Image (cartoon, helix red, strand yellow):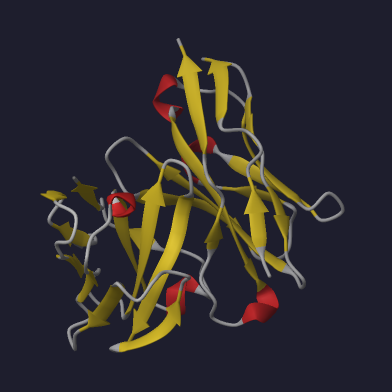
Length: 115
Length: 116
């Protein structure tokens, strides 16, 4: 079975500082990993994905994520946080060998960027 | 290109009633997935429809059902509502089966259901 964990319910960071939102996963095969963001009263928006290749993936709005197979992690990062980055962030995973099974989402991490 | 449209956006029901939620996917998308979002549980998968057939089903009771029409529009129904059904119900569409290849699901803004 595939699963994903976001160990922090809330992350607070000052504007201009780097931010990290943590995600760890568990799959039996190779992982497909994703980050989505949800702004207040909106649906989720795709940020970035890791399928294969370079471990550092760049996505929308200046976000990037690093795939670390040995630590089974896929942390979301941004060098300089903006107040507008404040939102709910979801990590999701699918096992490459699981066929067309649905994405499994974490419980989300609320990011608050303070001016 | 219009995004995923969900109706109604907000609704209030009482216990024992039933509710039907509607989702219109992005034009050309044949896969529609439904998720339930609650503060404590995050996003939980309900079901996925592709070409009018249910392809995947999550671990929800039979009170939760859905269907997909030939134009790819989808509806979900919850019968005999319980207080615990209060949640944001999100619909997502994709070109491929549940975003299985691209991983990219396009979400609507959700239908917020409150059960009193």
